[in-house]
Length: 158
Image 1: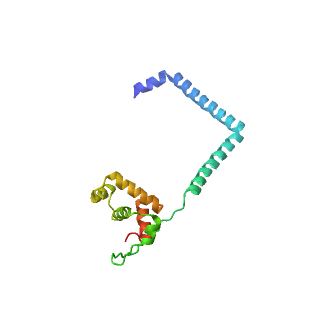
Image 2 (image 1 turned 90 degrees about the vertical axis):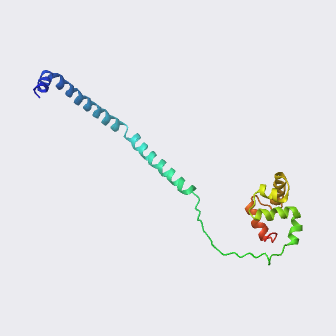
Image 3 (image 1 turned 60 degrees about the vertical axis):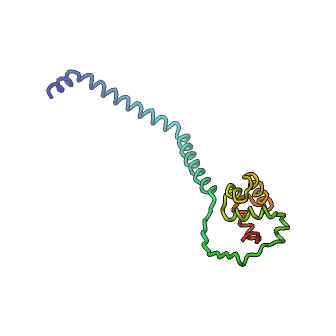
C-alpha cells in the first residue's frame, strides 16, 4: 500500500496533468457536439423524419404486398362405386382421346408413375410420356392431378 502511495505522490503532477487534459478534451468534444447540433438542426430533424418515413414506407409496402389468403379445409365424404360409372363416349370422341390414352389416363388416376405405367402396358417410358402429354393437351390441363380431376368431371374415368 505504501508503495502505491509513493508512486502516486511521485508522479502526482503527471496524473493531474493527464486528468486535466482528459477533462479539457471532454469539454471540447462536448462543445463541438453542441456546435454541430446547433448549426445542423434542420438537417438532423430532416434525417430523422426521412428515416421514420422510410421505415413506415417499408412496413406499409410489406403489409399491402402480402396476399391475403385464407386456407379453407373442406372435408367431405366421397363414395365412388365402379358399378354406377358409365363412360361418356361423346366427350371421348369430341376430345379425340384414343383408347390407349384413356388407358394411360386411368393408370395415372390410380397414382402410378410413368415408369410403372410403362411396365404395366409393356411400352417404353417415352411412349407413356408422349401419351400423357397428349392427354394433358386434349384435356387442356398442365398437371396429372388436374387431368384426373377434369377426366372425372367429364365421366371419362371413375
